[in-house]
Image 1: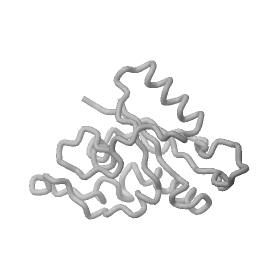
Image 2: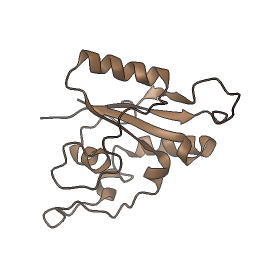
Image 3: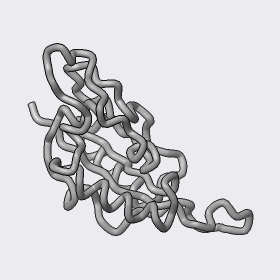
Amino acid sequence: MSTDIYGFIEARHPLAREDWYEGDPWTAVSIPLHPLYDDQDQESFACLFGIRDRLGWPPVAAGRGLPDDVSGPVRAEYEDTARLDAAVHGCTWVSWAELRDLDLTARPAAAGRVALTRLDLLGPETGWAAVFEVMRALARRFGPDGVRLIVWFD
């Protein structure tokens, strides 16, 4: 059984913490996740988000749900998708700061059976490279805690 991932990269407006700022604090970057990442790598989903974890990865960002301050377009997309497809599950998010500081040498609990590290699943030769490069570039403008990836699965 395959698992599909959906989501968006969001950036926090630089003035969102100001008392007078009235706009949405977060804005969806103009492209959804699928042009950057369209694989169905269940091991990376487990490693990052705890989805379909058969090896015991310590997930980075499992079960956080949709952020309270999610941008309007991302909330609408998620709610529309969930309304149309009862199989939608696992909504969560992760900041660029968390991804940037990730221990890429970490292995799953079942490491004795499998010689995988996070680098094998998330490194520069994987489908995640483009996602991480976009997030890295946005973090130069919005800061590492001002960029996040919001995802859900079906």
